[in-house]
Image (tube, rainbow over all chains, first blue to last red; front, side, top):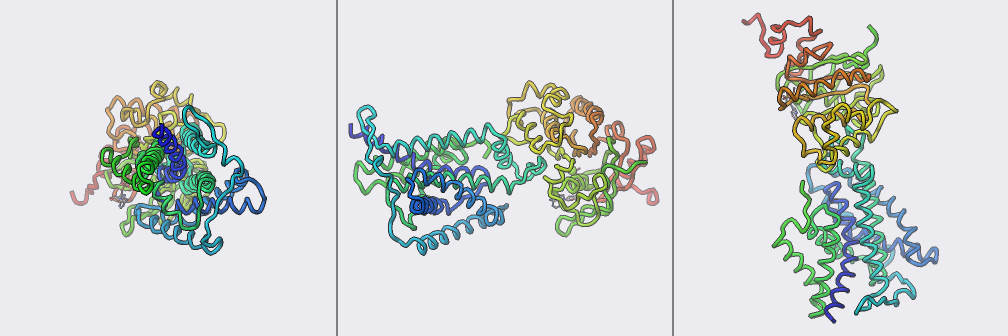
Length: 287
Length: 240
Ligand SMILES: Nc1ncnc2c1ncn2[C@@H]1O[C@H](COP(=O)(O)OP(=O)(O)OP(=O)(O)O)[C@@H](O)[C@H]1O
Ligand SMILES: [Mg+2]
């Protein structure tokens, strides 16, 4: 009974981690860019929502819909003017640039919003519980998981059913040959990062609803996201969802045994999966 | 003679310090077919890549319908009407056969003859295999996909780099059977070919390249086997 509850809580938490990871997975899949600032960009998204809330007085859910286009635009700019300049054969420059961006973002957020922790208050829905069989689950965590599944499904539709998705996959395969199809890889990359930051904003909404955040928590979110992507198999979106769930369930299980084991158990699961499946659960054939 | 559709003048190109092209000239008439032959390393691929904008010209000009296209990025050259079948086919492994064809129409120019149906009519075997990954096909079928993919943009000029490479003679014949039909649809063609016989058969004009220069050119009927052989292998009679 208590184990069932732990499992359910872990799966819901995994939904949040899958949301953290989806944008990272998308960007890595298309341009082989490991964005070390991804966690800080999620935190930035949370502050953008916070600003929208305080300016408009809207509920965070509605404020997030205003933040989405802002973050899309920011992602496009970031890719166009920063990342595209350093992408190439050598993988070190993009790593260094995204690492630098991580540091810059943290400091800008600290200067702008101080180190005080913040929360996105959802109002009465936070207290709503939904009985699911023998356990009762929070409405907001359920929405988190539902959003994660919806985001992954939508990204898959985009990838495999649209003209833009076809261009994403082709550019990922061969960024030189797509130019012979009239496609500019740099533009494809910019749109991809714009989309990734929209997903990060959605992740930020649920992050801010679940717990306090402050400018320094980005790198830890990056770590969870990174582990989820690797567990799932690089470039596989459904794999990323599975990876998020694995970490969520491991953390919940660890915490149920001893509260201070929560984080450790997540990392241990990551190492364990890699020991048995070095390329993750759902590796892409042609990587 | 009317003004050529594609005109290359004094083209030079480098890889770092290595000069790969030395003042190459080339004319292609509207609806015409030019073949470029030459041994390995002659600079044929470099010439194709420079025309389509993947590689940069150092000097010289490339005119399409009189307008300069050198210095334009490859996607813009495609938009102006020059499509390329790259050496080694370069299909997208993540895309099915049909998607490989469709992505060729990403920047489709007008309502030309080349639709998915027209490509399947040209290469019927592709229709049967359209759901397969592009790279799960035989070499000849993959080459058909690469040609179809380039045609899907409805180009005015089709550049084909060694479309017979590594294929059996019967397959090469099937693929070259498409060339007259492509020309009938109004597309002019440049073929890079190591198979001299094939080149002489289909082209109105043949250029032979050696070490980055055009060493011989003329109509197939004007060129003797000997002259081609000499131009190809760099034999000079003075020394012989
Ligand atoms: N990326 C490159 N970097 C440096 N040199 C290159 C590069 N590509 C080609 N070359 C050199 O440029 C010259 C011309 O090469 P190119 O590929 O154009 O020849 P080719 O006629 O197409 O030969 P093949 O019949 O083998 O395809 C060769 O000497 C080759 O070694
Ligand atoms: Mg070549």
